[in-house]
Image (cartoon, rainbow, N blue to C red; front, side, top):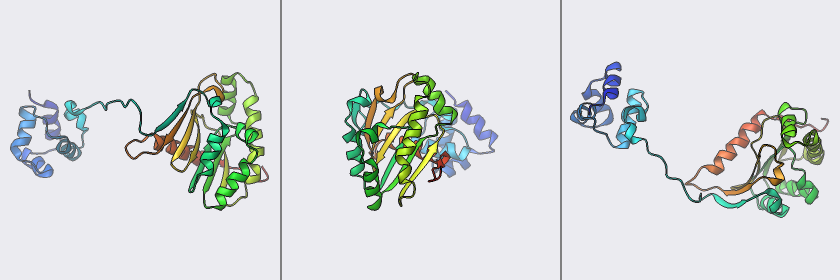
Length: 248
């Protein structure tokens, strides 16, 4: 069956079969068979041809659209917890204590860390002194999204109070070399706790406080991109956040 889509794109671009064949390093008869007989080229060749024609490869050859098989278990998933309350605070602090290059914390408040581990600021200061870059992003209590989250949790203004309390906890770190604290006003879909190539991701669920929501422990793996998806999310929020100053 002829590939009329391919025929039209070739004609619209002023291509000849010979010219396209030369561009993708195949015999002109191969291009002719693609068009007139509906033959499907190898994926690498199809990608080259689509790029030359300025067209989506799947629009030209829909049969090349392959669903990626689902993995039963991601190679990046270390552990899955039903709710954050099931995890000892030491799981968070031990992860940070092992960091050698970076620690990233993205939360609305997460005051449970300081309440359960009063040495948190000392730990972060020690890691920064050893060369770690520490970035902490907490919720801006006055932002619309933080206040909306409070309504969703049905705790009223409780989350705003927790954000202000988190700011008080982290304020002593503001002028510490290697540590930066920022306030963000974004909608958070997850709280993130990263230490080098490991990360704890605490899901946010509508109407549920974070302590009762699931957590997954990820370790970066070269064959999967889940870890980097969340790491990139942190960077995107960080770029919009406002640095906290000592006088704020």
